[in-house]
Every structure is written in structure tokens, then in C-alpha cells.
Length: 56
Image 1 (cartoon, one colour):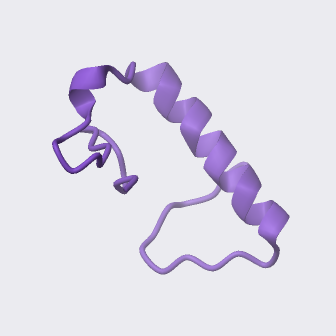
Image 2: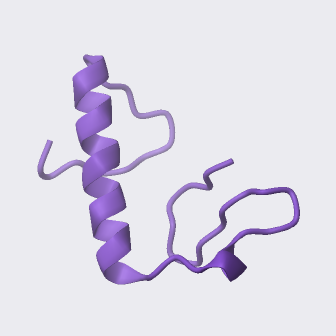
């Protein structure tokens, strides 16, 4: 899972593989851009400029 390529509709074999991929992505994103309170819109969604997906 270290060289995972994020694509729409990606499937994971197990729940643990999914959790590992999300954890690695979050760590990569945290190193790239700090999340501030201003990143949240009025609906409570988190939208970052460089993110590959939106957290709602």
C-alpha cells in the first residue's frame, strides 16, 4: 500500500487496508498543508485546495 495511486472508485481488500491508506493520506496531507478553522465552510464540510476528496 505504500505506492497506492488514488483513483475514483478504488477498492480495498480489507478494512485494515482502507484504514492504512486513509492514515497515510492524512499524514501526507498534514505535511503538505496545515488545516485551519477557515478551511471549513458553513455546512461543516472540510475542503482543502490540494485534497483529492472532500471530508463531509
